[in-house]
Amino acid sequence: GAVVSQHPSRVICKSGTSVKIECRSLDFQATTMFWYRQFPKQSLMLMATSNEGSKATYEQGVEKDKFLINHASLTLSTLTVTSAHPEDSSFYICSAPRVVAGNEQFFGPGTRLTVL
Amino acid sequence: QKEVEQNSGPLSVPEGAIASLNCTYSDRGSQSFFWYRQYSGKSPELIMSIYSNGDKEDGRFTAQLNKASQYVSLLIRDSQPSDSATYLCAVKGYGGATNKLIFGTGTLLAVQP
Image 1 (tube, rainbow over the protein chains, first blue to last red):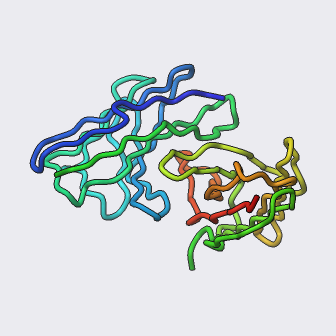
Image 2: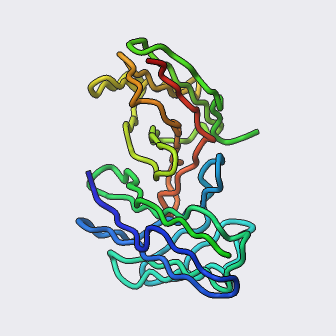
């Protein structure tokens, strides 16, 4: 199947710092990527849709100034958690749809963020 | 009403049995349906996609879709302990500028050896 990578896989930071997470589609181009957050024992929550060359679309209740998304190329989207706080600790997962696969979405391995 | 509904489980089945996972959705215009498997602490992995009414088989997995009843299911034959995971049903609507998926909350499957 298609491969989507994320970096870093795990990050621990101090409260107030910013953390950048990268999502790459390794063998296909993605004009759209999605960012999810998942708290323990809960389902995936879509945070935003990342659009190459244009602004991201955020879901209701997600602060766009806190979760900055940049889709700089057809294979790379980044999510920056600005001024992170302990309540931002979560599992962040990106996904990308592959057109030739019927727009099936493939998920990255996820980034576990812990804010102390 | 939730857009995609699943029984949270846990669904417990003995090894070798058939596990049946169910999902209902509210948007009658939905066109694409997916089943993902998620192991604890890992990201979701695509198992099956189905777009037309009827059954679609892939190895031990069979997806079933009934658009009239707005119902999609996943059957796992010869269940193995390694199948123990949370199974997420996802639905994509018709048209629109994005390929946004709507996920159910997932069903936890436990296969007992």
